[in-house]
Image (cartoon, rainbow, N blue to C red; front, side, top):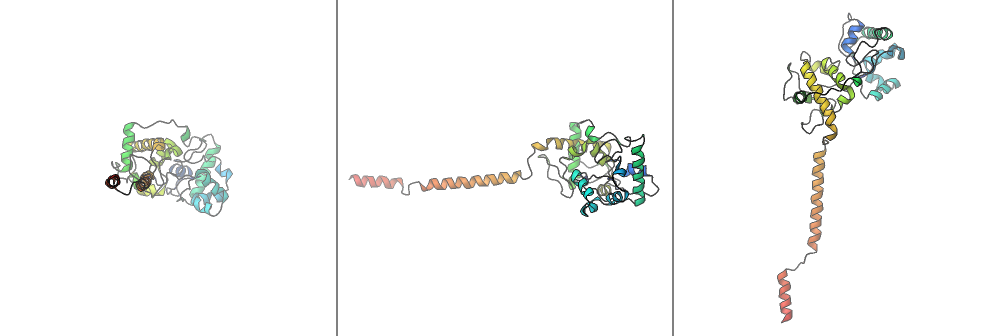
Length: 279
């Protein structure tokens, strides 16, 4: 479900767009879930002024494949990865479409409309917690105990969260225990409601989440994040087993040493010897 919840970059858009779409249309569809233009950082950085910071040819390469650019040794791309710890997925956008988006960013960032493309940063959003009912439903949806209304796959098919109350999840995608701390309620809700990531798009094509399901999943992930410090680590069972086995070895050693100090002859033999000696 959340195969790319940890992914963010300068332009995290990946939904295909037609050449007829305007830069604003492409931005709203592919970028606005993670980025603002002048309203501060959301899931990814604020894009106001990015066209002044980076040359167009660099932006074209980065947007198409940030990972390839970073692997090529580009210091700026590597610095972005180090800062966000999240490589951006390859983008299904043509040069023309990217140039339209960049023009829209430049126009919006320099005009009176700057900062109105997205809501306030997730870090400033009120930390509203889910209700107990929402958290319970979110956990059941995550595990697959309750099916999504539109038939999408359960989250733990690909993802894991650390919780003593849940069975282990999948390992095909990122671990989500602390995703709420990284993205906040607005960021997680935006990804679930209008994902810009190819894997989620393919898995949930025509199977979008309802608002109720999104709120439940966000509440569940917020609770998991909040409680993670109190959860047993994954290797706790093996640690307990190893400690128990070590304790048994120590006890056997102690009993063995104590046994060596016992008299090798039986008590009755000692009594018999004393009686013979006294006669």
